[in-house]
Length: 404
Image (tube, rainbow, N blue to C red):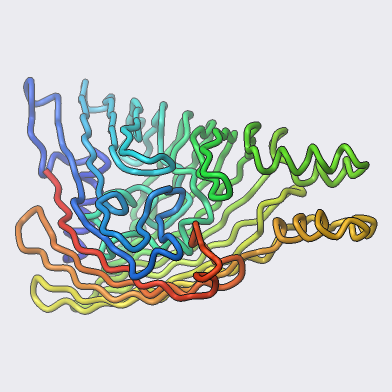
């Protein structure tokens, strides 16, 4: 897929151009969509491989829920300055079944040729591909590496953003600032629960595109709050009842804790060489049980006509929580061990190989094999049995991405 085609796919996903769309009710209303139909299977039932914030994934059986999704988007243009866009997305996330969510819902006002404002539900620009991470056709790989994208599961928020675009010679610069409140559900592997969270958040992203190369820097901060995380609440209640109230407050997120995420990314498509790389880090601005972390991945491929084989390596390193446990907790060995395990960081790396075949104008076939190597705390693998601890997992997936 050429760099220009990738850019067009991104714009289509955002409703900025009417390509691959059907006009209904006149020229003002544009309907477009995208989807992925894919099957995946891992080589073991001793652990479960999932996407970020996903419950089902695959554990030794074939599943369509890991990568399959369907999105439908409508944009109504009132005039040359004012429009409205909504997007619904069906996929499997923190629950057992496919659910449909409102991924985008905003009104857009074009202040000038360079500045626009959107109000409503908008994307959080945390990652290199945040705007189109769910549009499989716009991406080379089958899925974003969980090592990187598992660090921040917040995809959108209800609020507003402002976008500025300007050309400096042959370099196009885009800046985005966003503020609002993110809401959603997070999957907790310990008890398979789906506690709700909310996070007043804000951030910005700055990207520069020069010929076939795009560089992007992003930073977001939010005050993460969740009051019904059962495993955490049980632990903090116990700590408070035996005199470790400060530690309980440090661990808890029931009152909200400030977290920050920063990333830098690169996209390049030059003379059939395709490169994508990203580095990100999560940091706590207040004491909280969540681990600080660093992660990165690099993907490289070479296009032979309509066929693009690629290879990627990804790595996640959990640095552990910023909380310091009191020495007195050591007098209760079992509780001390539980707290220290909670606060410790995990790790994981993976290697993947795949091939993409653009067999039709608006559809691409992908086959991908991931070799996952879990480290501390089993990395991002869940439902790990005693026999599966420390064992590598191979995941094979194949599917078709399409836009319409």
